[in-house]
Length: 189
Ligand code: 5GP
Image (cartoon, rainbow, N blue to C red; front, side):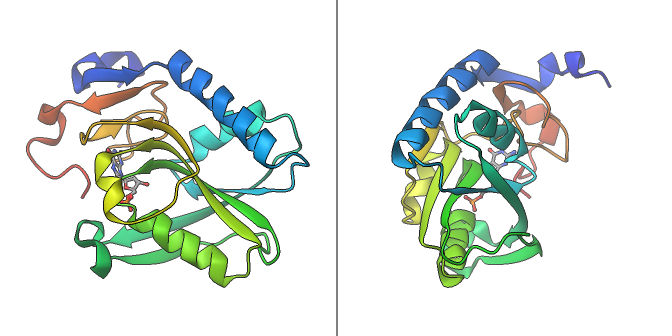
């Protein structure tokens, strides 16, 4: 299927590629101000954060050091019972480093709160979070997010790295997935 055929799959475009890039540029200026010597390790969460990492890293004016982790979360909706498993660990030693976690979207906050604790337990000098999109639900688990791209409504969204069944990641903007695509099932599953 061609990407141009997805018009019917997206019920609403929330942000265009240009709007996202403008916001990324603003965030990059904040990060440059907060880490003036560029002394920070950007840690992206696979796979969704690949796109935001690529755009953010190229927007930064210092030599950006990047690494990736892959995790899976279970029971995110029940929050405290959620379990996070590392599927791919970092190549970089984080002890003593300033870490900036890069996430595509923060929903319950379970994944990010677990990752913050995990980086701290490895002895990171500091741990901050950048989430490109954040849903209102995210306030339920207290995670301090220093950089937020956009707060969005509690709908299931795709594009800009975010998938449904491994599709739509390479859609350039962010849109709400039309309910007929997942046919009433929980799209988070
Ligand atoms: P949390 O642990 O914050 O509940 O979940 C974060 C993860 O859930 C994200 O990294 C993403 O994989 C997935 N997720 C949450 N909301 C959405 C959404 O609206 N669309 C997509 N495609 N994934 C989502």
